[in-house]
Image (cartoon, rainbow, N blue to C red; front, side):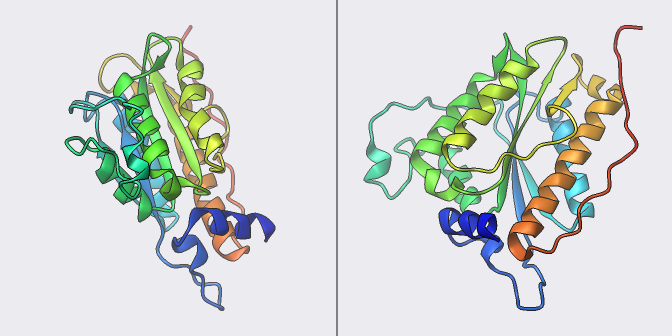
Length: 232
C-alpha cells in the first residue's frame, strides 16, 4: 500500500488514484512511443505485441510513431520552466507527447539500435519530455524496448531506461531484457522468445497498474518458456 500511495503522490492525478471502494478500476491507458523511422518495422511489431497483451488484460494503449518526423534536440534554454511545462519548440511532436503522457498511466518507449545506442530522435524526445514535462511522467511505470540485427541492444536498452529512474518511474521488468532481434522488416516475427518477452512485459505492467490502483491484483501466470537461438 505504501508503494501505491507513493506512486499516486508523485504521479499526480491519474487513473491510478481513481479506484472505487469495491475495487473496480477506472480504465487505464498506456502510451507507447515508436521511435523507428519505419512506421511498421520491427520496433512497431514489438510494441504491437505489448499493446495486444495489454488489451487482453483490460488496459488500453496508443502507439505514437515519431521516427520519421523532424525532432529538435534540447536547447537548454529553460523556457519550459516559464511555459508551464511546455517545450519552447512547438513545431514537433514533443508537446503533444507531454499532453498524452498527462492522460496516460504508464509509458513504453521502443527504438531500433543504431551503433549501440537508441535512435537519435528517440533520445531527443525523451530528454525533452523528461525536462519539460517530467511532472507528467513522475511516478508512472515505464519500460524500454529495443530491437537490433545483432548487437548493441542492451546498451541502448540501458540508455532509454536511465531517465525513468531519475523521474521516480517504477521500471517494468519481464522474463528477459525487453529486446527483439531482426534486421529486415518483419524479421522480428521469427524471434519467438522476443515476442514472448513483450507479452510478459505487458502482463507485468498490467499487474503493476492494477496493484497500484487497488492492491488486490491477481499475479499473472507465466507462459511456458520459449528460447530462440539464432546460431544453429
